[in-house]
Length: 634
Image (cartoon, rainbow, N blue to C red):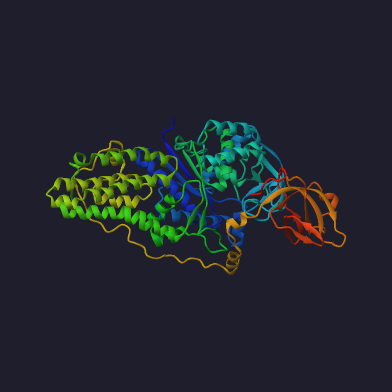
């Protein structure tokens, strides 16, 4: 069993500057790497940038630059941010690195010689923005990308294909046998359902542009470049020397691939299949987190509400930002960023619970013992408090290993609560008045030990804050202290406390400008309704069993619609210009079934058939797959 730890972020696509989503993934990965290093595990942490593809080539051309110049510029912004954020990566890989090119070409050659790559012709709808092909059935309105909503291009060109279909059963077997290979479990179920629908062979090269890694020379086919997803995914092994110097390859397989939920399919379907073809071990965990909104709204450049992580860190402090991201939302779920929520976390969790505890310890030790701290009498007087905390700490680490950072921090904050409560309950100032100096000193030492134990374990998330606490309480923040205070459940050695400035000054107002809503957004908000108003409508699936024209109307059709009741309903609908009575019968439609009846041109209408309208006219809204009459639309 490989005891080494290998942690990766996705390599970030150089089509834009870093945003909160990039920061979230990277800070989780950094915290996880620091956690395992604290435990003494040999850990390798990889991040970097993905720099090839048609989208990059087009973006560079639009700016009057070469693709490499543009990639250099944006990649440098990512690296500078992670360096400024003190991200503890061991390697920052770029897909333009020569070692990566060699590794990607070797991977292609190996899969080709193993019989998993063949030459053919591809015809399909291609989204440049997502670098993805889609089938006709996947498109929205026959032309729009189902992921980003942008218009696709019909592409027909020569291509090399990977036999993804040959790995369907092997992938399903892996999902079944490796319980937590995809995390969280709900995301794993989505992946399994996707694979069960059937896998098509995957186009893995392009010949319509040049900005990419050329195919291996042995093929003699220089017009093709590797498709961006094959190129990008291979980074996880090329960074370890695959195809070149494999001295770091002992870190493989990856312990954690951390990704956003939008790229989970590529990592949990394509990547394992590639690895099977290469006869390499599969990753231990592929973990997908959710997306971030801002004040409840989706972020977009057009709205001007994209959260700039550097701006947040400069305004509120990097450590506070790290804590907020990892405490605010359960891993796998979507999160919402607001300054109010961030300020509440800083003032309440960090200021009141953590910072105030250190201030009290410093103040009491200065008052009662000239800053000397002695743990000798803690167990004599307050053993049950120490044991209660040790019991919490015995179980807390599993949350970090499962990426449940919010629960990990919640449990550590229970330790801080116990420490603060011990001061209030045992009242060391009373003990001093009663002449019980040993007991008073033991209370201060109890609180200091609880803070020290908690700070060791939250140091992966707030490393500088934890270091400040360690400096003040006189212990080293390292693996030896982890083993002493956490594993062996020992107490701090006799030491002298060093006073320090308050860690978390209270924040009274928002420190960043909030984007003003546009006129369009204001108009949209005026039209918004509450969920209960929407759910007051009862929408059901129906089948048109009969359709008739109305003699005096060139707009209306009289429909009899079966919605699962004793007899069909009569509904009038203004669709005559778009549908004839013969072709519409048997069509499934969606019906608003709880409307009050109305009389139109002398006929009663008991409901409304839903339609969609654009410049091309009206179309009935129907379920994608046939449903029983009366089925509820939710």
